[in-house]
Length: 160
Image 1 (tube, rainbow, N blue to C red):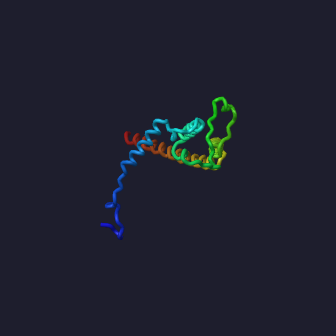
Image 2: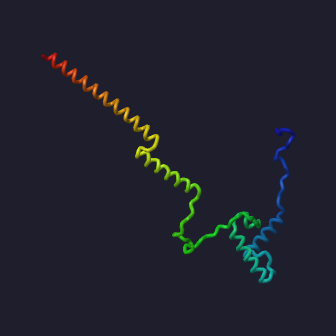
Image 3: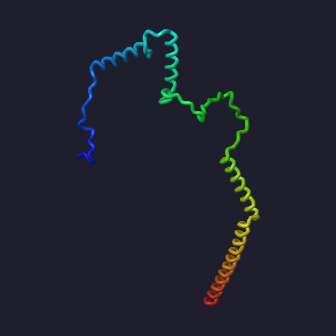
């Protein structure tokens, strides 16, 4: 049931092609195939050459490019370079991201070098923390030794 008073596409009158029109289209298509794509038989040789050149250009282009001539000033045509033209030995310029990445790596290496030498604030804090932990462990080891010695002394007294 149609909504809002709009009618659907069903029930429309059907259009049939004329048999004469179908025959005419098929005949035109056969002529095109026989002539190799040339539309008119009575054309001169110069017109045939130009039309074959135009057809080769159209065939080279794909899609809509062959149908529409465009003049885009921003479009850069890609040029393929020959192997002989490419200069591998020339130093290429780095992009901004590549430069930043290299700079970041160098600064990280510098920091690690200073850190290992103990010249950074973080390294000093780490060394101080390690010294405190060492003292605590030494004190704990001394206490364990004293307790072990006391136990041995008590066991020796108990055995007597």
